Image 1 (cartoon, rainbow, N blue to C red):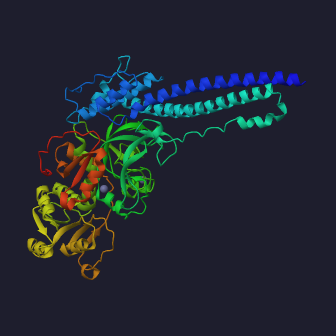
Image 2 (cartoon, helix red, strand yellow):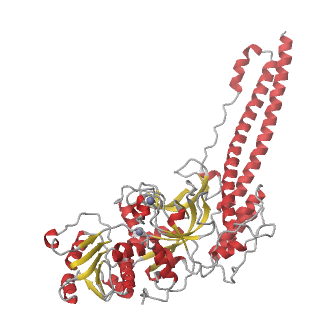
Length: 592
Ligand SMILES: [Zn+2]
Ligand SMILES: [Zn+2]
């Protein structure tokens, strides 16, 4: 009997040892294969995005070290080097995917020619390996990124399972050996103590970004899932902003599109949020509500926007179905639209953005126009035009007093001119801004820090006052100034964003038939403004005072928030820096 136990024990030990060795060998092999593929895919996020840097990474991974990219676009225009580097990076990314299996064709991303007009042409010219043009390169690029996400998640899981396999293999081997020794020693009755020889399982390595040599593929603090991340300007609570990793946006509703942001800008309301003046904006929100970008993915219910379309994304989103949207008062939308970007949902100062209600909220940009020509139609132009000029009822011949010569005040000057007013008077405390106001078309400027604005306006209007006063600052003093400047029967249009209560002198105003209007922009005039820009009647490019690459948004904020010293009006953020020709017109061309 004892002998039988010993023979059985030895056999069991041999089986355990065999299984242990098998598990160990397979797990080690599997692990090294998975690690190789992870290393290979690490090229996706090579921190050095220059062609040379990516070529070096490629060589390390055993991929072709060079690939020839066109230096001119299909129109024969030169492609700038930054765009070529990006195209190269994408080529390598897709090539890597081919090497690791599953994907069958390569695609190139959009990239701009020097005049910014090459975008869609190039996308159309990209050929798949079969030599046929891809039906939609941008879409394909997106799909492959999603596929890579899945592949990497699976690989990472496999890597951890294989590590567990190694631990189990070692445990089986050691217990087999222990079991065998005990069997030979005939000490079967003390077998339970043999377990002491089994080592405790090794602790699994913690998951962390360092485990993949990628920059753009990692778990962020917003999610525990591993997926592609992008860079965006994030509001992290009052006074705190950062250009940091956040998960790529995805389609959440069938009416959404995802847009690759090409050009964006910063607004005064972004600074209000950063000050903590806008409590409904939660920390962690991506800021920004003005941008031009390319649609790279669309929800199943979107019918008027196609993948690859270059679109203007307005600060106002419209559900198109609520009572206010049906009245074209989109700013008041109660169906989930209104001012939501960078306010109640993630905004547009980012590499990618999700745009809800795409059919009713974005505008296709005419081919002939640059991003900069239409960018300010996202906010300041419709704001000044609708809430200032139209609410103020500016008529031909009117004297229009505009208090405040910041970007919105200047936009009010520009759009008031569409109605051929008799005289535009700009009032501000800064001489530099008043000089800008004259460039934009103001006929008279008054520095109300050194001059008496009311006396001057009365002198210019035969003692009556201005027909229309537009408030474009947002403090009590400037609103009250407007009520003193306006003529009996005149109109005061408040555009400024007020943080405090202002005094309304009804004891002086009650008998003067004065109309006071307030409002948030509805952006219902955006198609009209787009037509004026297309026809060369409106040139908004003089608003641009500074340009920054999108990934230098932090520096752009420093410049924009120090406008008193930098004289910044609008700072433009460009994903792929494009060398625009200098604007030829200094201000708007009036209809005439
Ligand atoms: Zn704004
Ligand atoms: Zn609505």
